Image (cartoon, rainbow, N blue to C red; front, top):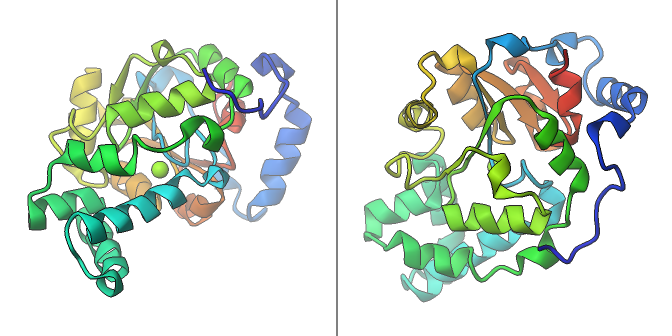
Amino acid sequence: MGTGTDVSQTDSPEEVSFDMVDTYVLSSVNKDSQTVYKQLELQDLEAVFFDCDDTLYPSSCKVSEQVRKNIQSYMNEKLQIPTDKVLDLQHSLFLEYGTTLKGLQELYAIDPYEYWSYIHWSLDYESLIQKDSSLRSILQWLPFRKFVFTNADKTHAQKCLQALDIPEEIFEDIIDVVSVGFNNKPDPKSFLAALKIARVDNPSKALLFDDSVRNLRAAKNIGWHVVAVGNSSIEAKEFCDAWIPSLHYIPCVLSK
Ligand SMILES: [Mg+2]
């Protein structure tokens, strides 16, 4: 159970203020580009996939910032990479391989579980991530098969959910990078593996919520519906089906 403060006193999606939501969304995007706010067809979907980091919780939680620092420490202390080389290498590996982990596996044959124990599992999740009863209610209300789909490890996703006070059981499965054979997003193999795990034959029956523009673009390129989440993904509005500031706005893009 998380010990943080609830981000909202809202206990059910019915209590979400839709007037406020509409105004906020439309005023947060280019008003000449209404396509970022079109309604998706509920009946076309078979499964909904949620990225974990900076999607299930906001980037303001600073988890990713802390993880980046931990990765830099890992590269310096465990792999003896000089401090002045770490930042550039981390950045280039992330760009080339999709995750720093994948790059370090290729170049240094590191043990992913040792890596995760260093960069993730030592995090003070419950002080970084606040409980979110509003999001829990929205996810419970959402009438679709739901999956967490993350480039991280399952334990990390579980700890994030615990801190959010969102039961893991809301999701049919947590699809982590191990589940997809370490072919992480945005590699198309990752999306195909996720579809197989979810037993979804047609990519157009899948919907991804993610904060990463390149992940969203890769999913869109193979036929998924995609919704960009968070302010950093606003550039994704050019190709995404919808853009929302946070998952609390799901009722705006998925309604009957
Ligand atoms: Mg993310």
